Amino acid sequence: MTADTVQVELGPRSYDIVIGAGTLSRLGDHLRATTGSDRVAVVTDETVHALHGASIASALSDFRTHVIVRPEGEAQKSMEGLDAVLDSLFRAGFDRSDTILAFGGGVIGDLTGFAASVFKRGATFVQVPTTLLAQVDSSVGGKTAINNAYGKNLVGAFHQPRLVLIDTDLLQTLPERQVKAGYAEIVKYGLIDRPEFFMALDDELGADVLALEPAALREAISVSCTAKAAVVAQDERESGTRALLNLGHTFAHALELQAGYDGGLLHGEAVSAGMDMAFEFSHRLGLCPAQEASRIHRHLSRLGMPTRADMGLFLSDPAALIDHMRQDKKNEGGRLTLILARGIGQSFIDRSVSEPDLLDYLKDIAAPMDIRS
Ligand SMILES: NC(=O)c1ccc[n+]([C@@H]2O[C@H](COP(=O)([O-])OP(=O)(O)OC[C@H]3O[C@@H](n4cnc5c(N)ncnc54)[C@H](O)[C@@H]3O)[C@@H](O)[C@H]2O)c1
Image 1: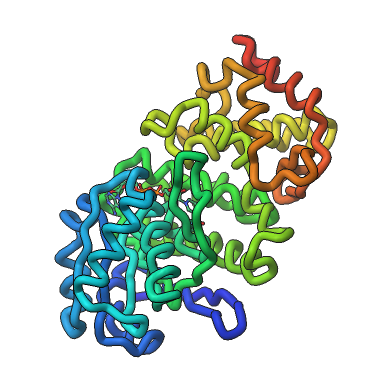
Image 2: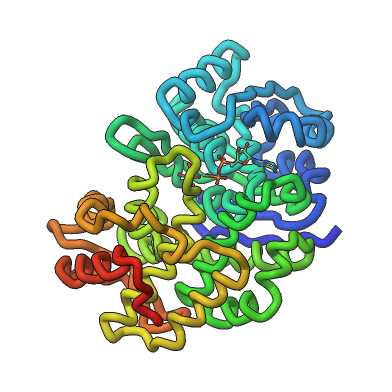
């Protein structure tokens, strides 16, 4: 079994991300080496439990385990979901030296990580992500959160895992739509500051990743985790450069709010269209050459990824989109902040985006014609 290891360098909170096909079978060894505890609570959702529960049980056969199975879906990232996990941990008599392990996608990761951060003021946390999005993004970096009536991810904490173990074999059961949603975050790392990675994706690697080819997955996930680890090491608490990871996300969040979080538009789908829009808008501002913005659009379309041309009705109310963008956590002093680009791999944080320019752009794309034609 070939596995890559990427380190997240955070001084005493540093940890390894182990990436490869079949790594789950070595989970026990990795846990013994990193946490030292012999008791593990596995928090998972019903789908992942049904598909992969037996594999993790066998990987943890030498440990005392307690499995907490939650329904799937974003609604679990709530006070009720949190209470259910904490209650189960208390009932089972867990303490801080035991390990709390998230086995699922970003929903389970965020919920379990937040539960671990508040359980007895902070318990040992391990991530075994099972969606592509969680493997390249949400399991790395220590952001944990639940949602409330005021918005998504507004109640949370930074709580770094002790270990992230990524088994690419787990992705073989993931629905294609979820694979594509995760792929958007992979493309993002190329577009932020790794142009050669984007070129490789555009060449063959991207299609191989979407076909779940093991070597391609290991390579793309390793590069993505290396890119995320580098940003997190520089700016763990998002006071500066970590905002770059939000390329495409301000547009995406506005689209998701318009779509209404009912499964009609997945986060990664909105990010894919949002990156297309960030580059198109950058081109309109004279920042990014037309051929680079078009190349990204063509790459996404060719691989069947959503672009802004697929956003239809979600784009029909430009004023509402701007309103949503005003709520973005990155904004400072009432000024809109966007991640824009001077080209592929040349993204930057623009803290002085002109609202009239942005509104003009959104009005133009809300019209049925395609301004690129
Ligand atoms: N903390 C962070 O830094 C961060 C970053 C990005 C996103 N997020 C959060 O991540 C969440 C989205 O995560 P997600 O896209 O992984 O969604 P998810 O956790 O809802 O998983 C998507 C679906 O795939 C199913 N699934 C998971 N693994 C599977 C497998 N191996 N085979 C078959 N089905 C499987 C799940 O049951 C679910 O139905 C959002 O809540 C978002 O806010 C957090």
